[in-house]
Image (cartoon, rainbow, N blue to C red; front, top):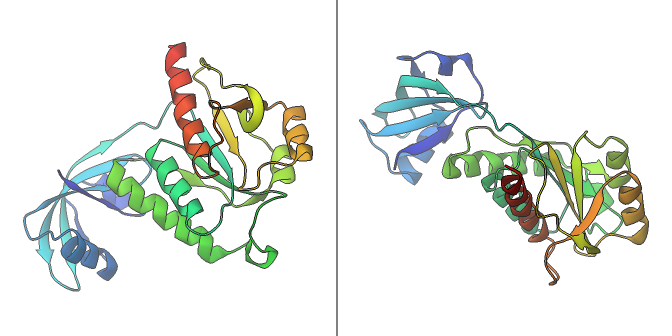
Length: 242
């Protein structure tokens, strides 16, 4: 299996036969983590659909050079799949970001809700946002995703409801309708709550905004499981509409 490496968007990737010198951190990753050596093949992508086949032509502790070969443009998904999830504690949110990337979410929206268990003074953390972005990049390297999901800035739920994207929206909530088995293959939003669940006022707010409250199965899903199950359910419902 050809190893993959994410490089931030650059016009360099559009030029076949170009040589690229990687950063020290990237060199360490290829040499010490992936154990690649001179002559090994690697696939380079910019997260916006540009993919280049490359060969390592110099690998040492400080510097790695790549010789780019064929360059291709991979089209983006024909519809957007938004995953708006209440920010979860500790590593649970990391797992949501990682698995949502693997499952094809195109947009990731962290939300602060009434029952979100994150201190107010830690909510607008640039370090946390950068950490999540790195998870998206490394996960995309591993799962073959060529278009990085867009990580949105965290939003307070009430403000987010005021600016909902023009999509069909599913609110994951206990006591909701059965999750639809068929959905038009168009832009879709999945909204998932915190460990303590939605408040009644939040459910009313979102339903009044046009979201459809739905439940997946009869069991109570963990807060980190529900958004992932929702993403899979949407894609299955899209497929049934074809």
